Figure 1: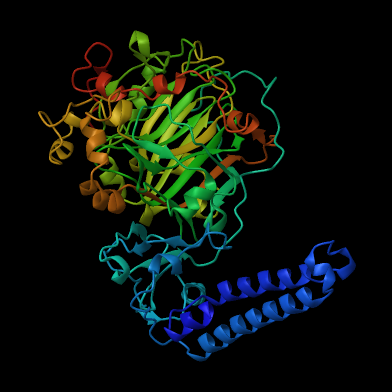
Figure 2: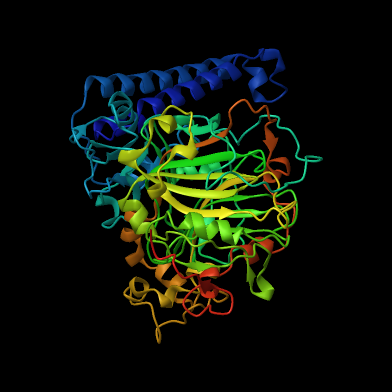
Length: 592
């Protein structure tokens, strides 16, 4: 009668739910197939078989009722779905115990970056249930998410659309929505490949390359993250050490909450909704594999968009986690906070310095160079020793997003070179996975960091790639008030305390990040859109696939202290306008 009343009121139950009901009833019927002699000595023993017969008849009737509902629903096609006046919509969308519980998401819908609720080339259709809407998405090229509304409306969106929470009002008469991906997939916990350990490998020994080039002319593809399998070789790290407002998710939750998406068109990594007081969902990724810098490698991120905005602290960087930081080396490729410009910096515990003479000569070939420089790579934040910072082209996150292309980093025993290649100028050698960086244009070069042969010994061990979006905390929080766009949010004294990161309830950045006014700019700007991430090694080099420290240790760094917090501390404060103690300018580096 319950099932029948649902269909009488046209209150649709999904086909999948009805099949689940019939499956459970079939299991119950099987349990009744017992020998009457095993019933026991209770009243049922005096009427052997009667209870079993009646129970089986009841179960059969229920199964027929469920099949009747299924038949009626399918015959009704895609008509409007209107609930009974007294129907409880929350029950209809209860996913507990269903196969879609970690796939479909209740009270959530997707919005395109344009603000539209459907992707270009599609329009609203009517479906009888969420599964039918999902199937429509699966059959539609370019669709990655569906949103199924209470009235039967089905809207399809692309991979770059962002999830938005639906807030009900109106009680039982309120509308509602379920959303989900184009298909539900089993989620692996992470990489399982057996990789070589990094013990007993030769020490890093600096060499000098000819001119302003790197040591190797030709490279070949060694590793790739791209398309629907983009996240397969990454570890999702939960721990944050930067005292920020980020709440890093594991892989299952990241896909379920829509903070990561992997599609043929690209991979999305974004900031999500608030999950705890003063915490928002976000992502930190580490590769399972690591690469030795001294034989040489190139890492390339081709992107369409990078995160930016008040309180945003994204980073694309390299790190060794086999030993305590910074003993194994760290290289920041693309890192900035708020609207500050990105800086390429290298950190080590050795007394290594850049080859300043060569640096000055080669940097003259670059354009729009910020001449600020720190020559020593030795890093000890407590002693205001910040690592080496070469004169370089410095742009903020909004500039990088307006100028999509490829960020490429070449690292070998001679030094480090960073490039930004505009999307329209990506060379054929890179497109064909056979890069020749010594032939690339000087106008693409962002930073050049040649090592001094005499002092740069044992400065770095195998490096894993890290990609994350931090929020507020030691950098973005401490510099929030220095940023004009951040002050324009209205979060400033006397309403809050700038840089009060140890007390999030009064910190200006954290309060902004926790306010509904931050939702729209975060959804529209705080995300990576990555076409691919690739690593290339010198052509013909036969090198083992090394395990990263975090992979070998189950997602945990060697040093469990706050070493990363120190390593990610406020470089902007110390290398900004008031940093005359350590940073100095070199004449003649203002341009070509």
